[in-house]
Image (cartoon, rainbow over all chains, first blue to last red; front, side, top):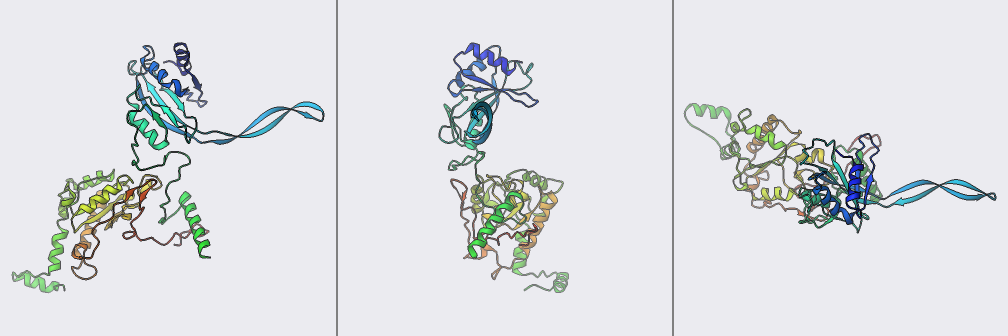
Length: 217
Length: 213
């Protein structure tokens, strides 16, 4: 089985125009993945499927990940004039890293019958942001098994797959507007009756109680 | 007006059978409650086990599971009701003929159970349709379902045929249709049928964390 680095090398030599990066996994599993740019994703995916040596002809799993924007503090070394002398000073800079949505695909090779495969080959694609530019190219034309799972990603995360043959909600009803697996999803508050509240529900009960007390006072 | 038991036995010895209309009417009703054949989740496996030879629900006159709501008297809500499924469950209930009964089987059917905080799970079917017997458990054992069934039979038996406590099918004014919730943009609309499920008193939380409401 080839590692993600080796597959990246094969892609680079076969498709020099494709923009593919390696995403390192620092955990002991070391399950590194390949980050495809949306523009060249279908070409790379078709290559991975059709290449005789790789023959990644089976997409076993497709899922989504929501990465909300977060504030990052970084230590930056800046040269400053301190008492007339130029010295290198460390400064902490805060910036907001923009969030994005991610689609993850796990690939195996049926042709090679998993003989040499330790784990799946992991592909990732990232949207430009989480609000209006959430389009990604669908990989269903390459691996048919991704069809329902891309519909599920569309339903729960709100990634719009262009080129998907039948992009509809699959789990929630058609009139539903939210995307429940996003980190900022707020579920409808129908906890009005709770005999033994605890944790999150207890917090909600306390806020509603204080709101009621404020209304009666 | 019940017949005295001693008198009944004495008359029975003479070959005379004495009863009241409500007694024989309820006897007939309670001994042929036909459940509807549908299951929603894993509780349905226990429901199936209840009907099989080992537990044998047929002993209670409920062996005939009807595949149509129009022929069924009892709806056993056996499992999790998702918000996508809830309108269909209410619609099936509306299609059942009176007299009709509901057993909410298991933690999910009575409150949402382990999935209560999920965005897609209805927090108890009693928000939309009246439930006669609730059984806790995850899932409840067949004995629990049989106990619920016997409880339901006792309830049917105790029902008077006249007066304010009479069953719904003998009350011309009674509400027979239960509004089917719409699937809205964020939740079911309305989230609860207030006629069936009046708003309980708000939860009061004391500082010690004890629930005194």
